Amino acid sequence: MLDLPYIAKSIGALSGVPVRLFEHGARTYEWFPAKLPKDPLTLYESEIFSIAAHVGYYVTPLFHYYGIIRRGDAAFVIGPTSQIMANEQDLRELAFKLDVPKEDVSAFVSGMNGIMRLPVETLLSMLCTMNHFLTGGEMLALSDVSIYGAEQESIKTSVEKRRTARVYEETPRVQQMHNVLAIEEALMEIVRKGDTVALRRWLSEAPAVRGGTIAPNQLRQLKNTFIVAVTLASRAAIRGGMREDDAFTLSDGYIQRVELLNDQSKIMNLQYHMILEFTEQVEKLHLGRHPTKLATDVANYVRHHLSEPISTERMAEEFYLSRPYLSAKFKQETGETLTAFILREKTEEAKRLLRYSDKPASAIGAYLGFSSHGHFIRVFKRYAGMTPNEYRANP
Image (cartoon, rainbow, N blue to C red):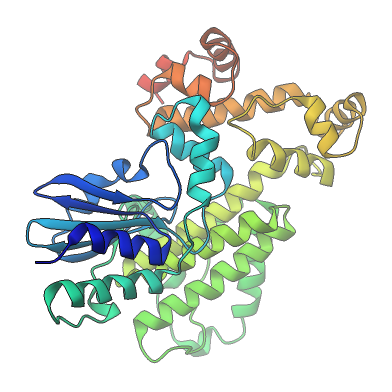
């Protein structure tokens, strides 16, 4: 007889990653390296347990990994972990989705940051080793483990497929030898400028590209091309004003995701989605007709503090400026008051949460740092032209 709780505790202590033991569908044991007010697994439990294989793997929208191993009526669920943990704003949003009480959000963020970071290959190897022990000798390779992604189906539409196919369809190499560099430079300039309108137009009209051979087979060729593209896009976004840590985190997440795909159409759709996201992120930072460093710094600051009450005094201290000077300079450079910009950005984030979550408007307003539900409704109506509930009914 195997002592399953002992195995769960040992694996958790060795890896520094949460481990849970389920028997006959009920959670009977858990080990966490740090105290969490709520277990993030609850958001993804149904998807993870729907994995049919006895050794499986799941990736969340924040690129957190969960592993599952079944042995008869028992199951171990390991995770979340990631090579690069999500930033504080993403973790606060995760806490919001979990209904973590406001007074416990800081403890949740701290607890998530206390989980050991592991490369995906390390977690997969750990799953295979555990399975070997639990099954009495089954030897699985990393390629045998089923890989699942949370957004593989949602990131694409039929329009994106057609546009992507036009960009990446195969054409005779001789026609492409002299224009690859020019095409690459044109596309990265669009990313740097954050011009999503130009990007969509470019993708609908751009010539097909076939680069050099950089892999022994078509699947590896697509993945390697993707990695080159995301590297270039991240650097272009940084030149466009995106913070380095944001760009590198986004880039690493996309590279991790593409390595989990084995379908060529999904890789191409992911590549389109990736370039569009980098361009959109830069676009959000470009304020005014001629974006300045101060305006970009302010946009970055607001993006990273959306779930807090943002004060102009604290922001001025962050930039070593006086509050009156910061407010006047921002208005001069963007044509918009600093307060109006902050409230508009919070309204845009509220729209996203109303569209993609089932949280009540009152909870969304509280999460975004509004002093009261009435204040949230007034601000939302001012910038969106309707109440939060009206927007949710007709986004």
